[in-house]
Length: 142
Image: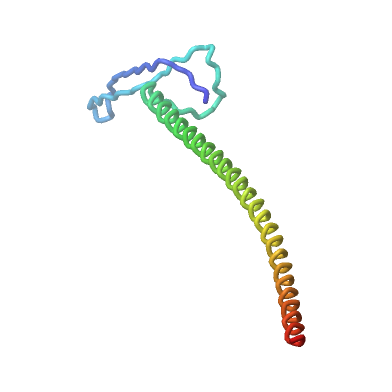
């Protein structure tokens, strides 16, 4: 935002005129000039401008700076939140990966134990059959 500082000068002039009916009427004109430095040539011909007092301008600048600061804080908080979410996501993915590996390991162990169990079952069945044959053989011999 471009701005220049200047000094305001007010001129008031009173004059009186005699009306057609002979009465005197007083008039007052007021002229306001804003003196700007020649080096501050930032305006164009016929350009519309806004004139604020320095006090109002500084208050508005403070308000804008406050808003900008709040926005920066919000952005920073948002970035921290996003970073935190990202960290939590990575942590979650790592835990999930570890759990998945544990699951796979347990599944493999389960499959091995199940295989052993089936082998033992077959072996028990075989021994049971063998035991029955022996018993039959002994009974037949006696």
